[in-house]
Length: 176
Length: 176
DNA sequence: AACCAATATAAGATATTACATATATGTGTG
DNA sequence: CACACATATATGTAATATCTTATATTGGTT
Image (cartoon, rainbow over all chains, first blue to last red):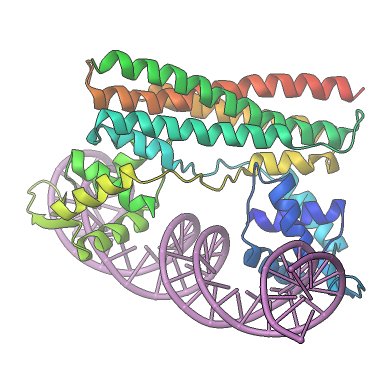
């Protein structure tokens, strides 16, 4: 149910087309939400149908025309209600840990490779997070909060790397 | 696609009924995978239909009869293939960060409450993880790996709490 | 006997997500 | 002009997940 809200949030900052929305999701909020292109367009259509967003066609000369989406008053209310509603823990689903849990079926070499693959994955994620340029500056509240979500991802990535170090050391000790 | 594999993994350690499987998922692997009861039964049926698991009815006197599920040879092959297949990063979806990202629309008090609610949530998760008794002991490889998945959850919970400390301090500084 | 709780399984309906494919416009390049 | 590529939107389909309800057995409690 939260993709609707994430989209309302983005459109409340900046009205845009579905195409740009997909790009914005990938680039700016990708560390805590992702969405398929088709899902973005379908969700936009749903928001418009429910009166939470409006669209108007904007003629463009150097590109195909687009639908510019904005949040309606009802959409803003919906957004604020969601922001203030009680948190509920999301179901955790971590395929890597699932594998590690059963990985004693694998030869030790393959276990080391699994840990190494995870390390590469996390290093990539960390690099991506640190590469996200935060355009605005200053002590604006929104800016502080958005930086905090980035810092969250970075902190967890670093923790994962430290945990990998410890886990690899533990594996060495228990496999002579 | 991974619930099938997680179930194959659990059944490869210990054949059991759908009912016990659901309990085991909640209690032992809940920190990296969750599943609805109906999903567990449906997935079991699917595994049996695909020849990856088998079921036999076991008559019980002090309880309703049950279907005891075991992994077939084909199921074990499937499990091992999955364990050794390349990792692919799961889409990250974190409703809490999504809210924080847009939370500057809320009054500051509500933002503090959001952070506090998250702290309560994480404290609960941490307590649950630390309460998981790991029955087996010794330097058995499987034991080491399962402890490592627990340690992973604990490390990330602690990181989240530290990040909350820092974020709350930052919020104080930027809201006079 | 009536009732509740735990054990045990399953199906119906809906929501969400993912994967693939289709279509069209405009720019730039060989 | 053919072709590739970025921009722009949309649908079909399948896989997954969630929410709800139904059913039956057994043991214990009032």
